[in-house]
Image (cartoon, rainbow, N blue to C red; front, side, top):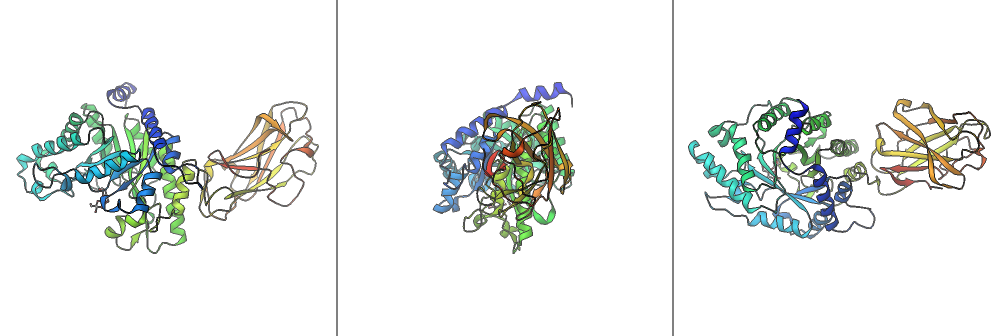
Length: 508
Ligand code: 9MR
């Protein structure tokens, strides 16, 4: 793929991602207030990262006041699970009924949320009259359906899943009345009709099992390349992400998202849930949290990943048990609308830093590995312990140890001498404080390249060392974080942060 081709595509259509992020932020500000115990809703945390965080919803659920309250406050985007599908919106040929979809767009407007339209063309949930239509009439019926629906929702829907689930698992095109009538051309025809009806909507192709690399995502990749080459209006690819703990995580998700992004397309996670076999045991719950966290991390790592939608946010209204008997518990909230460990994991991955129920869920144990506090090296030994109920992604964690430099060079070197995790996992640097405090004008900051800290787990010992580049002596005796104990204790004078937010220890 030449750079020239990519640039041309970027200019061809649509909002830059940055603007989408700005809109999302504006949306979040219009949404409901954060609960007292948590700083920022899922959507506010996502919006701070230029993304949206949304949920599917459906008309029968909305009268549930407790459900609607969380839907309206925690999420900045909604997708109607059923009410914009063909069987609902055009049950008889030419007779359109947008009542149910309008209830969802009204709810969204009242709560400052954006709406993803789902879906204009799909092989499933088609009314009988479409499947009974002679092939020669399918194209006109499809164009008319798209035109009427996309026109009706102009201004209310920011993105459309124009074509849903066009592929079989092996990457061949799925048979449908549309494919039978028009071959794969039906996809370009549908996109053009949607663009003509609503030139401002972001137009997507959406499918499941295209999160990782493989025959199905390769087929989507080949298709979107072709469409872009032909100048067909296409803005993005939706990855549904109906994941299951027993089938493993699609580890190449980030690389896969990136290859679509490199074509100048947006990417969205459109229907995320992670089902487990019931009854869920502790290991499955922990793995589920990890999967949710990884999806968030992957989306944040890909600039063109515009947001994440869960399908739906609570186990109370999940589609999973009805479709996969014996499986379920796939959502972020349980059947009583209470947040599950996966919710904490998502918050943390979004930079919320309240894993396991608030500040204090991580603590740092410290001992001095230095027999002299007046020599030319400082040797803190640290251990990080997860005191919360959910796994913590170490890549979002940093630890600070404060000291004074004193006379001599003001440049430093730092070292990891030994770590139970392996020093290659540990990052370290010395930074000067803008405003020095008592016993502190510099700090050693320790971080991690990756890994997860399970509930109650410890990183084990991390032996650190630092010196001035001129090897002059320190006077550690009055350093803020310095102690003389030789066994590990929580002194409270070494701070730990998740996503940059203080969660343990006290700063000088
Ligand atoms: O959530 C939807 C559920 O209520 C319907 O019964 C089901 C019928 O197919 O569709 C569900 O949503 C699907 C979505 O439209 C497309 N991707 C798979 C979703 C789960 O089945």
